Image (cartoon, rainbow, N blue to C red; front, side):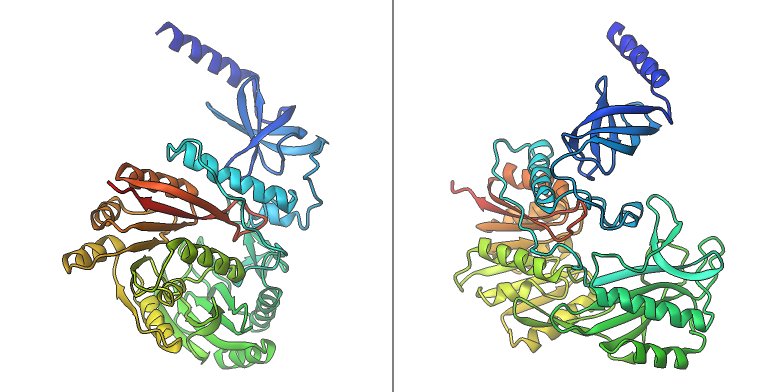
Length: 469
């Protein structure tokens, strides 16, 4: 009790001593999983964006909590050798390029360390080896998809991105991490909407016509899909706007209207209408052709996704005889790659439209040894188990929240020899791998892949091998 009271007094004293707007100097000791530097003032951690370990910095306190605080960088007194000139300060304001101050090799090292710490701290694994992060030769202009909010700023329709931790739109014309044709397309559409005085969506009132502009472009094909997310059933001056967009975007193959009438942060509604062209665009992945729809998930960095999928297929160690599970298959981009090397592939996805696309993609690529089914992974897998299907290898690529515990339990019962786990969230991946380890699987290989240069996000491919006996 006495020690508790002493700790409370020390905490209150610290909160009195450390106040918002104070200026301090300190040594950056580490980086958080979100890429912020950590400076400790008498052991009290302050998180400061835009800093690099080893730097001495001056900062202003912006918030002081009970266990940690936040600061805003004011000056780098002793810079790191890994510091580089910012490409665009706006990228930090809107959160799209929060690591752009760091040389790219240092970013890759940071991501490798981030994965290692997640598996050690959250997964409970000891003395693990994490491979160097697979990076890009040119870590810019890589995104093949943009979802851009449309709002009114100073009386004018603007496109851009929200300032971080707010819904204040910052006008942006060059995002630097997107395919330049995508940035150009957004400007073309923005100017057309301005000419026809289309009303941008207002979140407070729920009124306005246009909510978002979504542009997707095939990395290999160059084909462009444009989706106008509307807050009402009709688009004023539709014929004229469609004609001008067709003229202004030469590579356009699909112009869609998506309808979202809900006051929500969810970008896409469930209903689409073709304004011009077809309801999909095409691209290539692993040498195969893929159709991609407005609502389908497709990795935003095509070359790096290929490298990640190649790694997953390599780790699966297929000989042409195996029955493989592909959970969370999307439009089949990894399923079809697996099917070329396996005896049979069973794949599932919760989005019906994605499964239809996956079936089409199998036909286009003349692949017949894959079975696609709609449903949640935790629901479909027990059904396949009841049908007596046995899997030699399982490949899982879940959303950020990771695997459902019931799915893990069912997969363990099915006892595939190998599990290849692809993840966009090392924290939940490490947690799930610990569950598999407790059930007798050994963590064999960990490979980070950088799909999001200039940001702290990292993807990771892991191999789990079932222990014999």
